Length: 207
Image 1 (cartoon, rainbow, N blue to C red):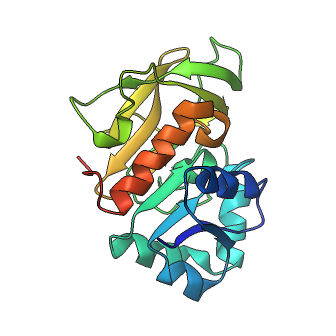
Image 2: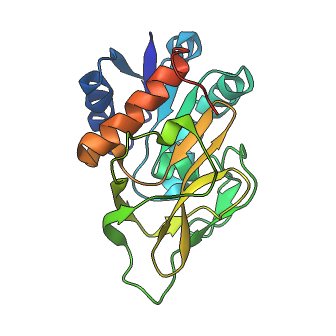
């Protein structure tokens, strides 16, 4: 399959590319519109400030490209700030407009805990079943580094506990978001990425 990791000049995008290569996929780091549009699956990583990521997407003309890819039903994965960008906006960067795939605003983590959350935490599924969270009985501990998180909504399929219930993973149809870093989460993180790849290839159900 042709899997494209969106290159928009933000952070260490190569780490996401390498993680997919580790599960047997030839991932391509690219910002070329035509290459992204032709991909069988697209991954949007992100680190740093929400507003800065929005600026770079818009400066490179990627907003409409990614919107069209998602509307066409191409499997799409947002990671960390890339997940947050799937929402309408963020308290971190008032006025910066997200992609609006999911409703709601990204908010700051509770002031009752140390921010950012920079630790391993356990995923708690919020749905009876989703193939993307199938881990063959292994405990779903993954690594988080973030100060903001999307709201818990109908798209949320897993949460974690950190000063309250925090949205950790979401899915609607073929659009998936992970607030944690699967590329930094060892074998469990790679298994979750492999589930996304298998679903994109038709070897695993999206439900």
